[in-house]
Amino acid sequence: MWPQSQLSLGYISKENAYDNLTLAEFAARFTSILRLPSLSAEEHDACTDHFAMLMYLATQFSWPAVCSLHAAVLFKIECGRLRWGDSFGHLEAHLLHGHANQPRSSNTSVSRQNATVQFCKAFQTGKCTFPKDYYGQIGTERKWVQHICTKCWLTKQEVESVLLLVLLATLLLRQPVLV
Image 1 (cartoon, one colour):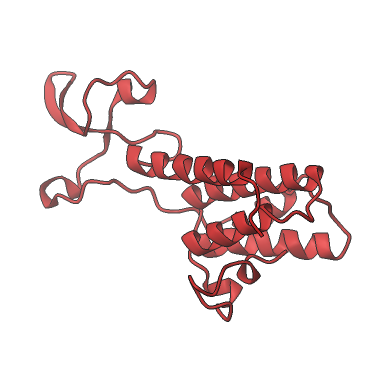
Image 2 (tube, rainbow, N blue to C red):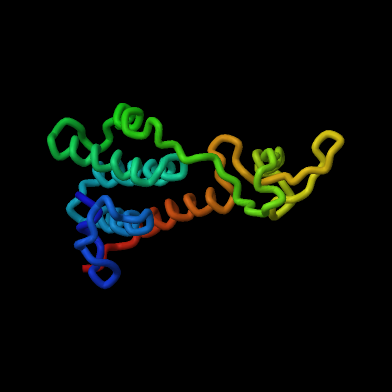
């Protein structure tokens, strides 16, 4: 089940090679696969879990590396060496090593671009009352405090985008398939 074969020609050419798929194209095609009536309930659940994991991995690793991981998983499944629902951790460790995204800040202001990132402590626990990054008191100094996750270095918008993508895919999968 290769994603490049599952999107309507009304949206994008099926001639678009797997290696050239954007994250959005991949997600659209993968969710189309998940809606196929030929998938067993077990395969459907395992594929949905795999898709969610790929989306999270895409926030931490380069998109080409995540695509390579998925291609390796499909190849191993097609060869009968793995099944949906098996652990793919060994492939993740091998194929994603050295492809981590560089930590980044959402703030592009020149005056703050090279400054040390000051994380909002309240944002980490979901208790920040500020809707955006802000100037706050750090010790005795007033510093620019950012809403960036300390674990994955994603901004609030990036985290919400990934969660929204996974939520939309989940909702789409609950809809009856129109033939």
